[in-house]
Image 1: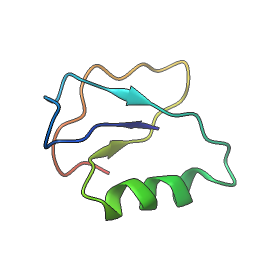
Image 2 (image 1 turned 180 degrees about the horizontal axis):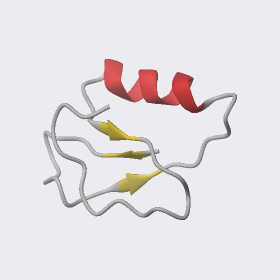
Image 3 (image 1 turned 45 degrees about the vertical axis):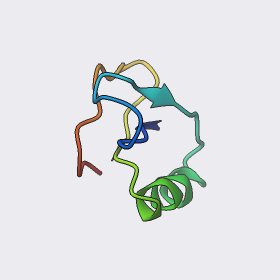
Amino acid sequence: MNWRNPRIHTPDRVKVWLACGDHRSTLADYLATRGFPVVVSALDAPVDLVPDAVR
């Protein structure tokens, strides 16, 4: 789970949270509900930026 807070971070500031398959959608929904852009990727596929309005 790659995300950022757009109010304080630029798109190249990526925070990474790990989530199992059972909880991935719950965590993505939690972040998106708060207005945080989210990019879901595999652990071995690093994300360099999280642009606005991505899910």
